[in-house]
Image 1 (cartoon, protein in one colour):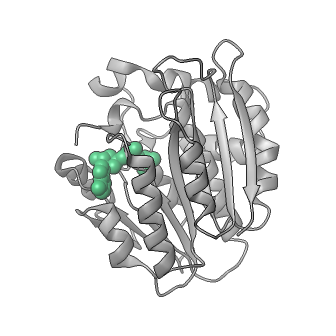
Image 2 (cartoon, protein in one colour; image 1 turned 180 degrees about the horizontal axis):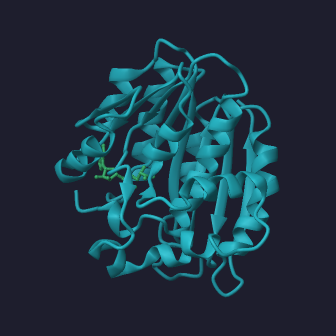
Length: 271
Ligand SMILES: C[S@@+](CC[C@H](N)C(=O)[O-])C[C@H]1O[C@@H](n2cnc3c(N)ncnc32)[C@H](O)[C@@H]1O
């Protein structure tokens, strides 16, 4: 496990993921019934963008750094920016989810890296309705699903350090769905020229559940090894999320584009 999210926190892929995540939570919370949120690859939960790690890469400059100064954000994005403004640390997915918890909801966080887990636990030790687990997130899918609430969301955000991790992720997703068919699942994935996605898309179709794919690229996939963008595969997407994402992604794409390049898409397929 070499991946450390502190080097990448706040980059264009991170803010895309967190904005999509907020749109999912917002849609789920249209109903009063309790939700359980499971973040299988939680990281530290919040990040100091002045740290040596963040300053080494400065990736946040092309992510949250751009968004904070872009004019006229749509409401969902200005709400996201408001929850970041004046915070000492940049929120990761656990903090995004914690901020959205209602009294009836709960949040489960898994992180395997010992150092990052220690930080996660420190950050959320006193948070109400939040439990951290120093454990494999893939095992967490088996341990915690289905939740007794029978409503909620699973965020799956692995580091993709292994060559076949896209396929592995879908295999684990299939297992999770077999335990909890109606849960909402959000799987983040990288978009790189050297990481073909056709087989991944086919595997998503074979899950036999409705799937929404939202993708945002800030660069063309032109053969370079760089991350061109990222996507979120949403299984069992809540009502109206596709419309919400279609409305905000054009603004987000143009705000984050590098040299006016890249693209966005929202693609739906039924079960
Ligand atoms: C992309 S980062 C997560 C970022 C976080 N979701 C966010 O948006 O702020 C991936 C995290 O997964 C952790 N990790 C790697 N393999 C894992 C596993 N099998 N189970 C749980 N965590 C794992 C890494 O240590 C890393 O902190």
